[in-house]
Structure formats: structure tokens, C-alpha cells
Length: 187
Ligand code: GRF
Image (cartoon, protein in one colour):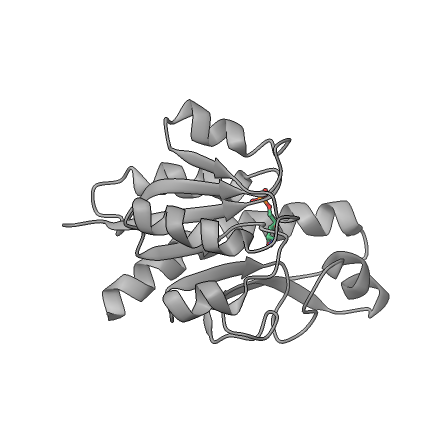
């Protein structure tokens, strides 16, 4: 099996990156993580790229046209698939045009509910009965592309923001690899 050369974009903790690295080492997993792109030099997640010897590229999103540089780097590493894993910047048309239906994201809510930031506090404030995570394609509107995999759980009265995050991420570690397998099984 020829694995798709994939880039993971991160900004922080990188626990989804770590999880995807471990899945990608499986013989039958459809992607190889060939590059990590990060917009935060202090991101803990960068350590996973270092430990596993994956090339990484730090970007300065304050620079004009920084996405042109990103695109050049993606081409240099022959990247054909992109996963956004806790990447806190909006992806512009430069990337979506060059990678149509090839960029996916993981979001900590049951989309279309709670797009954007601070999902857990809004979920609690809204007294939701259930929540979860969604893996979806990226398009030109925030958190609005087609869903690939969604997983949910019931919220209990004891769940605060911290617990919701832990429970959601536990599901994310299943949903993200599952979505990737689904994409390449169907295509
Ligand atoms: C995840 O919860 C994801 O849903 C959101 O950002 C978080 C990233 O976590 N988009 P990590 O950096 O993978 O630990």
C-alpha cells in the first residue's frame, strides 16, 4: 500500500498529532505523516515531531503571504493530504484551492452546533444533554464542511469544562483515525 504523504497542522498540545503518529505507523493505515506545520514555536506538540524524526516547519502568521510559504513547503514535501489537529488559524483560499477535499479538521462539538472557539463553556451554558466531536472537511466557511465522522456522549451533572474536554478528546483519538480510514476506503 502506498501511503498518502500527509501534513498535520498544530498550534498547541498536539495530543491528536501524537495519536495520529502512532496510528500511521500501522502497516495498513492509509497515511504517512511526512510533515508537521505549526504556528507557535512554544507548542508542546512540536516535541512529537522531534521525537519521531518528522520534519517540521514553523510559520509566522504575522507575515504577509505566509500561506504562500506554507504552500511551497507542502509542495516540497509532496504533501497530498492535510489534517488540522488543534490548528488555531483559519485556512485561506490559497490552501483550499490547492487541496480541494484534501483538508480535514477535528472540532470539539457536534457540528453544526458550537462552531468556533470556547466550545465547552458554551455547551455547558446552553445546558446541552450530549456533546462530542466531529471530523469534517474544510471549505471556505468556518467549521462548515461536510462531516466525515461524529462521535458523542451524554453530559452528566458532574461534568465541568475540564471533564468535557477529557471526554471529548478521548473520542477524538478514535474519530480522527476512523475518518482517515473511511476517506481512503471510499476513494
Ligand atoms: C482538540 O480538542 C480539537 O478538537 C481542537 O483542538 C484540540 C487540539 O488538541 N480543534 P491537541 O492539540 O490535539 O491536544
